[in-house]
Image (cartoon, rainbow, N blue to C red; front, side):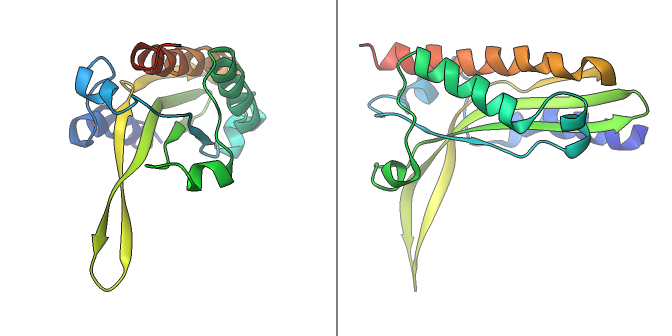
Length: 169
């Protein structure tokens, strides 16, 4: 089990290095948010064990929706996002590995956009991560896994600050 936790931590630490996006304070990454009329929110399914211990997919989704709406960022419906250039989508990813009473975790918030079409036999959309937070990696006890909600809030707030900086009201 410790090998699984070590592998997860390694993956989370290396992913930003091999990813396509820049760090959130990078002005080029922030520029990719300029002019977006809103974003579609996707929260990846959280592991069932983690949900039983108090951090649920619904809690993360509701937390993110509340913060984004409070900041005045429009949450695009499925129909709206398909009609929006780039199909901007904010993804919240909470990865975990459990060993006895501990969880290793990696949390990341990123924005994906469809950038270009590749034309061959068929048209294939090309999705890139245009903006991403630095991954938050750590270890929490099983009974305190619910406090990761605060980490999600902080990462969503990072996105909100970047978005508002290039889309002032």
